[in-house]
Image (cartoon, rainbow, N blue to C red; front, side, top):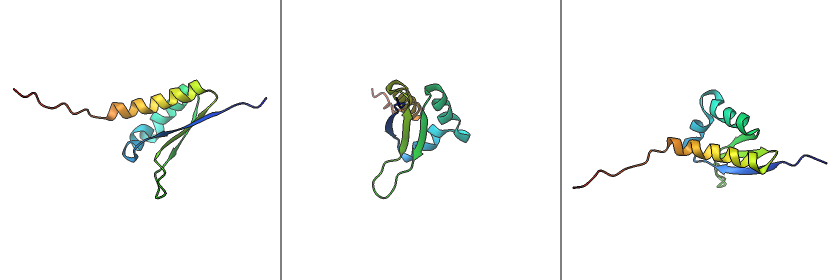
Length: 87
């Protein structure tokens, strides 16, 4: 029986790609190791393709864990605007 691989695409705005990849690939390599997945980046192009990451792995769970790890790193860098208190 051939091994089954699960694939998904995680869209990420171009401006966050470097943050998720990290210095010398540290962040993305950490996600790959923790989730036992293969992750490749894809840049946005003129045809309308989104930037983001192609994630493939041996199970739906591993791929979903990688997707969540990528998304959580995006949330970590987002600054939430809290309006000033008005009297």
